[in-house]
Amino acid sequence: MAGTTFDTRRAQMFPRLEPAEINRLRRFGQVIHAEAGAALATAGVPSPGLFVVLAGRVAISRRDAHDESQPIVEHAAGQFIGEIAQLSGRPSLVDVTALTSVEALLIAPERLRAVLVAEAELGERIMRALILRRVSLIETGAGGPIILGRESDAEVIRLSGFLARNGHPFQQLDPDQVDCAKVLIQRFAVDDSELPIVLCPNGEILRQPTNHQLGRCIGLVGPIDSDRIYDVAVVGAGPAGLATAVYAASEGLSVLVLDTRAFGGQAGASARIENYLGFPTGITGMALMGRAYGQAQKFGAELAIPDEVASLVCEDDGKHRYRLSLVSGETAQARTVVIASGARYRRLEVENLDRFEGACVHYWASPLEAKLCAGQEVALVGAGNSAGQAAVYLASQVKKVWMIVRGPSLAATMSRYLIDRIESTPNIEVVVRSQIVDLEGQDHEGKGGQLSAVRWRGPNGVETTQAISHLFLFIGAAPNTAWLTHCHVELDNHGFVRTGTDLAPGHPLLQTSRKGVFAIGDVRAGSVKRVAAAVGEGAQAVAAIHAYLAEA
Image (cartoon, rainbow, N blue to C red; front, side, top):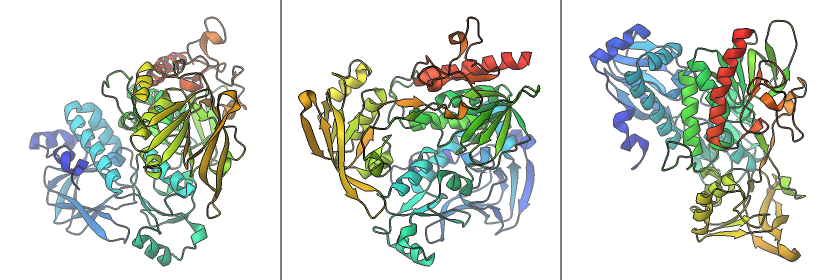
């Protein structure tokens, strides 16, 4: 495939280490031997770590939808085997087989993280290769689960979006479009009503799984040690939470990060961020947050995604610790807690909205959603920067974007550079002083509705109906703080967490009404809703945590 990462950045993906560089790595690993035909790693099974080939040849391959082996690349002496999963001991995405007798240096995950920190220049080359290999696997879907289901099915969209936003490769096969999907459905005797099903790399079959079930199956999240007491538990893996994880873990604190959906938060769903310092040409939210996610793993933070926190339990047992109860039934303990749970997307106040959510109503605009509505007319509600970024991105993929704005203009709520870009994009039409009043459509195969038209009311009560099958909502968000009710963390009248001097003069910066519990990012009352501000608060929180732990 021309233009793929495998073709354009092959030299960086598969560098050959010099003998002197390998000698520097020897103190971090142990030498192992394998006979020809032996499996060094198996897709779907946790890998023992990164292998540096000292002698012999090794084949890297993947399994396709027919469970047949497809070669990817071969490695010889001086090359290393692994990708980003090896930083945290997660399941291998590929099969690794010795073609000859092999001697290799095995570097376990915790020692690999030590390499990246202790050997800065060499570690940078290794880290870049690990990331690029993951990017290449995502491009081909190699090594990930296979989703069998129709492309427009809301459940298929949910599962695909979950995997895409977590940076995990996958394949999606539509039985109406791909013959091998029909063969697999027959092989596993799956009734049409059971779709979608997911075939995990370890051979397990999931029928209409939840995100948590899928995450467990592919090794994104494992069991949490309920007896371990972390220095910091971060609830939320958006830019604020990931910044806390990176700074805290890099300074030697033990860190657990929990998020109910995916890393990156709302920022991770941004089509392009152009006002973040240091990226003059812009960067996608997924790319920026993916780098932060990799950094957190590099420094040893433990990330449990998806794992939802049900409640924060504040029991004064004199041991200066907090307990988090998870929806899965597990518990986690920490000396300090950082609330970085952000906000939940607001829903449009239209009576039949829930009929179309998932398949036709979307709360972010990623390549997955753009593919569903390519060449069509779409409607987008919102007037903030996220709405502007989404409108510009969608305009490059669809026939026309109808931008429905309640206010008189975009000027009060959107950055000028985005307004200028919208005004210069011919297939974006901004409709001001208007709001959607009805959605029209019909049931689709008993799995929700298929949107066919959107009706909005403008000035003087004039209503307009437009044939539209996809609606995007960027109308703000409400603070995600319901899980704090048991602990009685003080909130403001809008449900945001109060911190610092907002509670009392001289109150510690970013600390909530509970000692050792901090709040940062969008969930904090008075926060600036910008990625850079969230990252800054994440760094500030670590300084506050050190101060608290020193006194505790």
